[in-house]
Structure formats: structure tokens, C-alpha cells
Image (cartoon, rainbow, N blue to C red; front, side, top):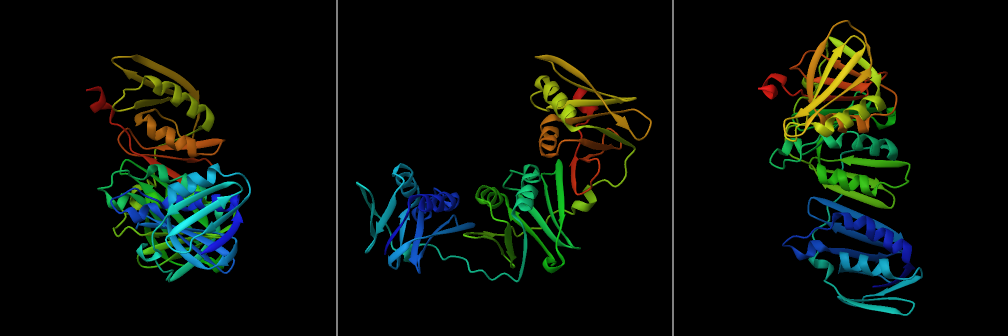
Length: 369
């Protein structure tokens, strides 16, 4: 294998592919499969659950393939001057040269690289890249990090009813978002995407306009020229999220997102380190926010609000959960729908039901006791 390419193209391709590299007892998983063919060079990395392939143009003088240590290639490319890079690999040894710098690397045969999953998607559709990034970022924080809870350790993706929906939950909170699908893109699918694959996908989403998504029985792929990400699906049953989102409430509180976000952030500085409890108490058009910790002290702040129904309510929330929600809500008026002190609350934009967060309360009686 022998090719010449621009350093920045090679480096960008490696930056993308290295997201799938892993340090395990299988040394080959720290290597990148490099293939030069028909004027392009492709780089593939895998951790057996997620596979990422990137490609870039090059002057291919001899077609071929080789496995090279990913981290070392990336380190070398970062330090090279901004000039053309030559790579020559007649066997399992590669020579990389750029101006006056020359590196000799020991590689492995491409036969040792794990088999790359085939793209046998039964259903495909496309969504705008910016919409996909937004959907992931606004929900992924609510997914469980507990790897023993397999069905919650990922994102639930559902298509159908002219919509694409994403849901994440850890059992104490839930985030739901949806966008419309064009008539030509409508299909039906319900899958759970592993959390690491989504985190990698967000990192490699670039400036492309559209992302092609394909779903098969056990895999999902995201095609973004010139990048491809393939992930295994979680084989588990996701909870019925529709039963978790409350449809009724007693009091709806409307207020400015920035004001409430800032107040909760300040008050939470004196929240108990274990429960992170912040109390909300609504009286008239004032929402009193308070927190206390026996070893530190207490804090309290008032926020002006509007209420659609008359009445008072007192409820406690984990401040970390609240702040995660507020960070992902757009600026403007937000809406808190509350039933009582023991049932979950709904937080969403005041004029939209396309992005909904459900947060379980902290029982005030137990906390005070």
C-alpha cells in the first residue's frame, strides 16, 4: 500500500476514527484498519460494539491495507508540519514521511482485524444532522449510567406516526423529544441505542446537512459522508414511557427559564450533599426556593412566577436533576406542571409539548425525618 495525502485530511480522518478505539485485553482493538483504494483512504476502528469508519481523498499509488496502532498514528500526525504526507506499507511495516521527518511503524496484517459489520438495514430514513444532534444532547443526560440496568443504559428511538422520538430515563427522571418526519421518510421502528455509541456520534457529527439512519434487527448505522458509525442495539425491553409522563396536574407554574435556573443554581450551593434537595414552595405569584444542610447552613431565594390555577404547593427535587433540565431548555418561558408533593413533575417549554422532562420528587417527610 502506498499513498500521498494532505496532512489535515489524514489527521481529521484519524480524529474521527479514534473515537471507537479501546484499550482492552484484545490488542487489535487499539489498531486502525487502513485501506487505500481507488483514490481514497479509509480508516476503521472498532470496540466490537461500535464501529467507526472515516475516509479521505489521496493519491493512491499502490492499493492495499494494513492495521496500524491508532494512538501512535494520531500522535505522529499532530506533530507533522502542514505538508503532504507519504505512507508506504509494502507488508506489515509502514513508513510515514513528511518533509524531513520519517517514522517507521510496525503494524499487523489486515486479516487480524475484526470482521466489519455489513450494512443490511431493513429500514432507512434521513434526518437533518443538527436536529439529530439536538435530540441526543437534550435527552442523553437522563439515561442511566448503571451498566447493570441494560434497558435503561441507552436511548430509546421510536419512529412512526410521522415523527421521530427519542426517550431516555434512569428511573428517577425522563427526557422525551420528538421531531416531525417528512412523508418520504416515514417508517416504524423501536430500538435502544447504547449510550457510548450516542456519545461517539455526537462527537463526530460535523457540518453535514443530512444523516442517513439504517436499522436492522440487531444494528443501527449513521451515514454522514465521509463518516459511517455502526452500533449494536441493546437487546432489552424499554419501559413504557407513555405511562410515566403525567397527563394531568393541579398547578401549572410559568416563569423565565434563566431566572429559575440561576436561582436554583445559587440555592443548591447549600443543598445537602447526599440528597441535593431543593424545596419549591408556591404562594401566590412567588415561588420560594430553599435548601439547607446541617453542617453548612441554608439558602433561600424568591422568583416571580405566573400560575394558571390558584393554590399552594410544596415539593422537593434533586437540584442536579433540575439543573440538567434547565441547561437543555431554550431561553424564554418554561412551564412546571405539578400535582402534589409525591408525584412527578413535568418541565417543558411553555408553548411546546415536543420536549418534555419528567422528574420524580424527593419526599420531604422522609428527608426532614
